[in-house]
Amino acid sequence: EVRLLESGGGLVQPGGSLRLSCAASGFTFNAYAMSWARQAPGKGLEWVSSVTDSGSNTYYADSVKGRFTISRDNSKNALYLQMNSLRAEDTAIYYCAKDWVAHWGQGTLVTVSS
Amino acid sequence: DVVMTQSPLSLPVTLGQPASISCRSSQSLVHSDGSTYLNWFQQRPGQSPRRLIYQVSNRDSGVPDRFSGSGSGTDFTLKISRVEAEDVAVYYCMQGTHWPLTFGGGTKVEVK
Image (cartoon, rainbow over all chains, first blue to last red; front, side, top):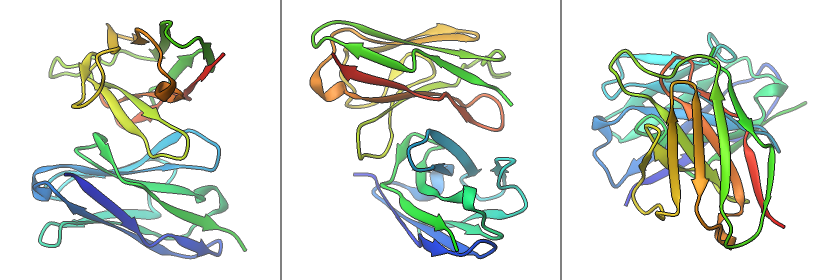
């Protein structure tokens, strides 16, 4: 069974940083591209970033480019999202997804507020 | 960026009746590899999104066959042949052909 468990969310002040993690199990992690997507409270879905299976290629939404960094550790079956210079508009549930966007975790809430 | 436009925003349905959701893209979703990367997702209240359909018309594992996807180019449709109570959700289309990946705004399916 595919399992994706996000962690690292919380309350952070504007301008601050957070690192999200996604622990993957139930599949061959290093064979799949992975992504982060988010959903602001009461709003729709927004793709944030993706990384290829080897980690050699990364992609970002313009809204986070230069502030967020996606990475993965295939030896630990883990996906990460380093978020810097956080803004109020980054407040959302952040989801980790397998195989680009085929299967999603339960999400972790990030709140950016003073 | 490719803009994905869904209609209607809200879809009141009678249980047992069919439902149809439209999704249009601002440019063709045919990839240079010949595939069309158009997905449909279901998000039930309080749950994370679940992919139902990939590459326009392929159902994901475990998805009931009352769900079907069709379309080509810039015009796509998700159909539910007979709506059941568990189908109450917000449905999103999403294109995976062009970077950045983009979602439609969502269609809320609710029971009349």
